[in-house]
Length: 301
Ligand SMILES: *Cc1c(COP(=O)(O)O)cnc(C)c1O
Image (cartoon, rainbow, N blue to C red; front, side):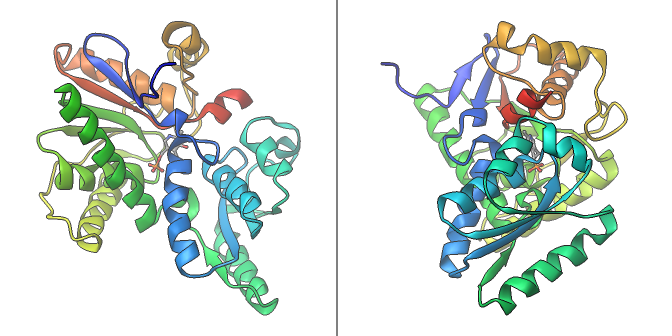
């Protein structure tokens, strides 16, 4: 039997960090984040969870599976197409089948109020509820990636292979901020390039930069003020949107690479990475593609 390896080689220059195979809570970066958020949930003795996301949210799926595993009360405040939610596969099916309480917010600006009301309701019933920001965008979510860099450093040290660049899909920003803080703690010189899946560069860079600094502060890491790069050149109009090339890349991903790339996150990021490498003559650089998951998104497409 082969040893489980979390980093696989794609070609001479590109390796892949396989968080799509993260072994708990359905995997991906939301599984990794939720496992560390769980430590805080247990520490606080919480027994009910409230969070939010879209109808194919990887985060809500990880929270729903966690709640089922630990028999905790859980409310997901979802936004998006309710009809689709009831027929789609992927994360929607996992959420439906998990037995958690699901509420639809009529529009995005009432999500906060609905979550607050659910928190109050759980307290009134004698539970100790725990609020999780959408996407697992919390200090613990960031910490998950600080620790992941420790794993990466071990691998790099053992194989004497240190990436010049890390590319990954960037959304709420906690994955990228955590990676940056982790590099400050454990590694040098590696550059991080987030491919934005929804936000414009200006906003994304600000959010990632601030959270990176906060994480360093919170976890006592010497902040080295690394350059924060989040590219919005591959948005294709916004979250969930893609072009023909991204679609084709996704459709051929298993055949070509032996792993899935979904159009919402990882195919977008992979496409952005390839294009960026080409445009900037980085073909000879050592590159790590951080595969953040999205298998369930792929299955729903
Ligand atoms: C949420 C998500 C991301 C983005 O991670 P953030 O920490 O929110 O920036 C990337 N890829 C996948 C598959 C995701 O589910």
